[in-house]
Image 1 (cartoon, rainbow over the protein chains, first blue to last red):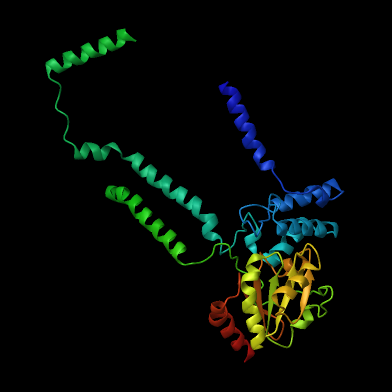
Image 2 (image 1 turned 180 degrees about the vertical axis):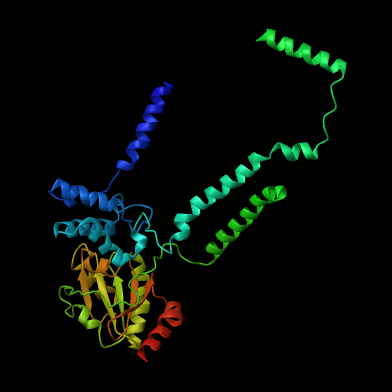
Length: 162
Length: 179
């Protein structure tokens, strides 16, 4: 039952990205060209809803952009030319994967930089964790004879119990 | 050094709160996308007239005089909000306002809407499938472009043009461009 639940959950999650808004009447007859249009559309942001690609969005403007992408492709543009056509009008903002530029430097370099910082900090802590403890706390006094006896008894019951 | 590690999360939290607060309080609408078309010539286009209205809009019409280009549609709620103010501008005869009637389901809808609410436009072009709207980088309606006398886009306002927007932003710019 648990396995079934996990499987159906996985199926649900995996099928989510398959959701798209392309209507049958928009599609191109040439399946290869249509596939290219779909690939391009997945990387273009819907400027109305912003967190969807035009491939997923049901907004009217997204539909018009999808048709435009297909129109450019049938006119012989390659994928980069189609992307550039849209970027010329809406800016880098429409690209769901922003390009690496001076203005996006923080965006791209930020996460690895922070990861490195965290790793470095972690390494430093890992290298000398006990040193601080030992230095700051006084050494524990040795066990008395009675304590030793109690400890042995405890250990023995532990062993036989398991 | 060790103490810093314990203080660091607090410092980061404060910095983040500051960052979020400054973004929230700046009043900037995250939905407005900066236009890449500012200081670029208007795209080449030739739109049809609204059936029965005459005076269609072409890119050549935007040269010679500072003008506003307003994206609207009879379906657009916010356009109805800004409409009375556009009518007021028209009555004051301060600047030619051209319209792009965007994404009408029925080509007659735009003119019907203008007949009902008043027609503030000099020229109006019909753009049913967003061809020109996309060339203008339009993300929604209404949007208003300030075009200088050389036909260069100088400003884009997203959302309704109100008295406040006109007085504080558009009018000073228009006066500057007329010099």
